[in-house]
Every structure is written in structure tokens, then in C-alpha cells.
Length: 113
Length: 115
Figure 1: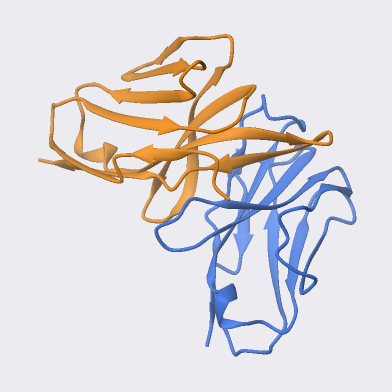
Figure 2: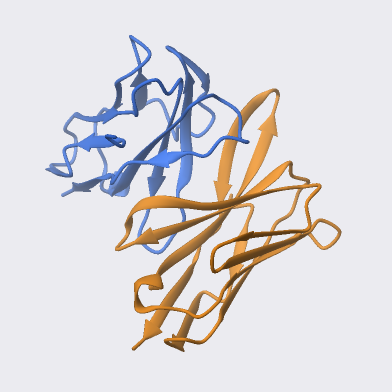
């Protein structure tokens, strides 16, 4: 079953506006990552935030993590048409020493020119 | 440099047939992952290799699915007696080392359609 759940499922905004996507998860994590996917193929890693971090920036991206609420948010500032994509959060899931990423269902972001 | 490549990009097969999907990871990456993504869903973990060995195969849905990585680089995902429910995009990813603190680099995927 999916650990992370993104909200909203779909978001449509005008170019230049800010876009905020949220992710909630169920169990304790070590890291949370955000990925972007264009046209249903090829995910691209955006940012990794560790459980002891509260906020991280990368260019126009800002990620926050609230481990007490088991939630994270991804903010894209000054959006561009090229930001149109699906965005996924992924959490680690350790089980008996093995490791895997568990992805949410994603937020489909559309930037209107 | 070259990224993760997957072949074929598209595969159409009839129900009951056997298929092989290939993944070429980034050179030097020791960890390799297979995921499956259905339409409108996020990727679902299938199997993780550290070197030549499958360190975690807990995501393989049943014994029709099998994957190998005999020399610690190229990996092949094998599906026997395909079913229509196997239709999905199969994604491969590699990372420099195992462990979830390392970024995973994804290939473009193989879209499998079982008719």
C-alpha cells in the first residue's frame, strides 16, 4: 500500500503564481524525497529532506517537513509552463534491514500560460 | 554522461506470453531498483539489487515475476505467463550506493501492454 498521499490530486494555476503541494505519510521515516515526472515517464529527483530537517531550499523549490504531523509540503515559486508535471513524494520504508521507496499517488500540476 | 536506459520503450504482448525487460544503470552505480507504475498512480517498488544480489524482493507480486543482475550492472525483469493486469510502465532506477539517502536516477521506463 502507498505510504505517502499527496494533496491535492490535481492543481491548475497561472504562470507566475506559486504552487503548493502537500504530502502525508503514516509511519516514521528517515528521509522524504520529492520527484517530478513529465508525460508519465522518467522521474526526476528534486530534493531530499532528512527527518531532522524542517526546511530545505533548492532554486525555486522549498520543502518543509513536519514529523509531528507526518507531513511535508513542496512549494514552487514563480511557476513556469515547464513546471507542468506530476509531483510525487516518496518515503523510505525499512523492513528487516531492507530498503525501498514508497511513493504517493502524486499531484498533477498544470501551469497555464 | 549517459543516464539509465531501458529497452524496449514499448512492448505489446499477448496474454500468457513471456517477456523480458532490460535496464542499463548508470555506470558505477551499485544499487538498482525496479518499480511498476499503473496509470494515475505512483511507482510501486518491486525489487532492489545491491550488486548482483536481490537485497529486497518484497514488492514482486507473485512468482511469475523474476529479476536478475548477474554481473552487477545490467538487470533483466522477467514476467512469465503475462496477464492483462501486468500492463503498466516498468521503471528502473539506479543509485551510487544502496541506502535511501542516495538519489535514485530513473530510466524512461518500458510501457508493457498485455492484450
